[in-house]
Length: 389
Image (cartoon, rainbow, N blue to C red):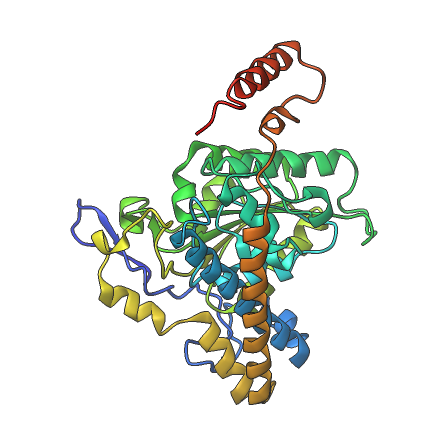
């Protein structure tokens, strides 16, 4: 079982290496395709409808997401970025969920969803502007249907629920028109489930029957706190208390994650209301580049999860099921090398913004006090011109 109690009245000890009997999984850690059972039979048709090309494309997306993350980490260590939150180990969860979105759907991320951003077409330089400290965002949210990163943990869940309720009021749900119907997906980590905003959002969404999917990447730790210090029962079981379905999926199995998310998003678009998905995965790296995970977790635990690596799993699946030749993996690796080199080049070419632009777009309409602040700031900076070193 996923959870157990050490003593009758003592704290719960959650096993963060075992997803439990309710885990939806189609490909195990060795790459073996599992047979359909009662737990996953609802999602089996979605997986069976995928082609070899679909499977290869998902693997490619995961490789590119991992390389993007690795370059972001390296750039921060070299002083090019101020901070970088790593997604290492969570590629399948993010790619699978993003691939399940439709063109009209809208995603609300936390700050670690680089894989989702990549699938939604956000360019690396656009992502890096925020972490380089030269932009408040970096991309056109409407074009990519991908909201700006939310640093305030859990806050995006309320944003997503409000947006989903707006879709309802715009009559863009359950019309039967695929060109009109839309749904929302909101991403957070296990730590985000402890925030008031998260719990308020679930309650609002359930009462309003809002077309939103809450996607919790349970990566084992909220910064330095393990699951056992955060909750007594896992997130997917807590959904019942809000009156919405909860599903736990193997977040290192991209096929299972895609299928579970697609079913939930289809249901939301059809007017069947919200779903909570817990993607059971693991954060192989640090919480951010300012974190030292060796202070609070054992290397042996990390080694257990390295054996569940989502990329190695999918590669083994593709080979054993004859969905790809070995040359395919060489081509993807070469493409990732080129992608990384271009990302590094783009990062170093990002221009510093003109200082007064920090006052732009603060308010939708003219705001006199802000204009006076801008004028004083420009005057102050100009006073240093010609002053020398």
